[in-house]
Image (tube, rainbow, N blue to C red; front, side):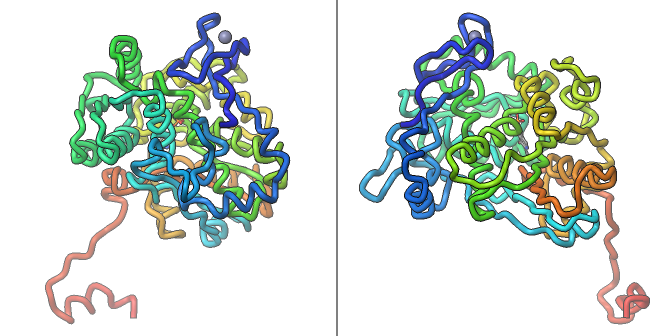
Length: 419
Ligand SMILES: *Cc1c(COP(=O)(O)O)cnc(C)c1O
Ligand SMILES: [Zn+2]
């Protein structure tokens, strides 16, 4: 594999590619480091290999921390059995763009994954690596979508699983998790309490892969596939700008890492996209720190309908702030009412029904456009990371239903004006 080691983001200390997520020396987070020089030798060949690869994230296996590179027909990788993720649509959203005064808006619809969120990508990579390392139980601390993805992936692989969630989660997300036959553990507290418990548990339970705790460096790499797909779908080039959601900040920072890797190799043309992060006002530690020109986030107690983004103490917050600054972007927050309006705007102009997190990114795109921060000709990709059917309450009472008797007269009365 082209992954070489785990490396501390703060002090650079290297570690074996094992189940480890924090630096012994300085407690900094660990990240997978690569040597892509072997790939750089034949970029046209690499493009052909990707195009001829499977219709899922394993077409990008050369850029993921797994053994054996990309699987071919004669080269099946047992660790990559299970639910494949990725290859979701990139949609040119002209009607949305028109409403916002922009000419080049694209929607990356990652609700079109097996459990209807981008989390299937990160879970596929974390669970593949977990199996390579010999783990036989999958677990996670989840704000909802991760629970869905872990439970489904464990079912597909025939592994036992435990998903820990805050007890106040949307009912749709709990139901769509329990159905896979996992152990659903509703913890009395918020996500940050759940995460603390999982961190303690991961030190106690041998053989358990907590996808976003002890497997976090591998989990995080899965988000890069969003960037690879966007670049490939645009014809091997980068967009000018990304508007993406921030919970822990992992997705946001790794999407940028994915573009950077391909630009450096010459696999994608263009330059590093401007990165705009999006949070809900009711849980916006990263947006607040950005606004206050600070480098670190002050933890908050979440109170927002965007529960999938409700992380009050975001692990990758400082890196998200740095990234937004370095690329000339920003990090904004939108209110719950703006989130509802964002969901409706996206649905009415593109036919894509997103959960609250997509309401956050769509509303942020609208805010940036209204503020004049985006040039009308810029190519902007807004990340839609989850499915509207999981957060139905967010659109309740945002439209009227016409209830009529079953008669032509009644219909004509109700819609007389619409002839
Ligand atoms: C988890 C999640 C995110 C982003 O999470 P990060 O912790 O920032 O990587 C975005 N959207 C949805 C719908 C999610 O479930
Ligand atoms: Zn360190």
